[in-house]
Amino acid sequence: EVREGEDVRKEIIVLAAPKRVIHDHPVMLKASGLQPVAIDAVPGALARIAHIQGFGGSNDEAHVLIDLGASSTKVVICRGGGVVFFKLIDIGGLRFDQVVAKQLKLSPAEAAEARRGVAQDGADLEETGRAVADAFWETIQELAREISLCLRYYSVTFRGPRPDTVTLVGGEAS
Picture (cartoon, rainbow, N blue to C red):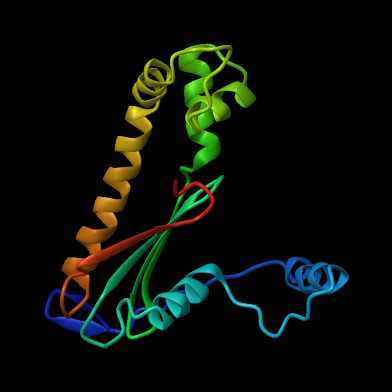
């Protein structure tokens, strides 16, 4: 339920994927020797994991999951094991690498290594880390602003307590 002025309405989150993707993924898993038992969209899977782990476990608790991936960041706010808010933000690790590569005049591969804390050719790791952080600081701020807007929208739109915990997950979380 969401508030719109004095009105209370139902908000529906709709996710879609091409049939080919839904069909090919379990086939790939089976070819790897695994036996898939279910398929779910990322927000639902993250909410289920948070619920199992005890985050946002009751209907009165809200939990934010930020899934920082290669191509995007997904913001999921869940309560009682269900998704109440989802937003896809087009900022991820690859964008960080592009910004670092451009700012420091590196190849994308060198930028990725530098961003992950690997010193090149005996370079001072602390100095490299500072230069890398400075290079993508604006992009991090842009991502933080987008996440802040998600939290603001949630607090204005949804009834109940504000989230008091955030979990950062995903391939770029570190």
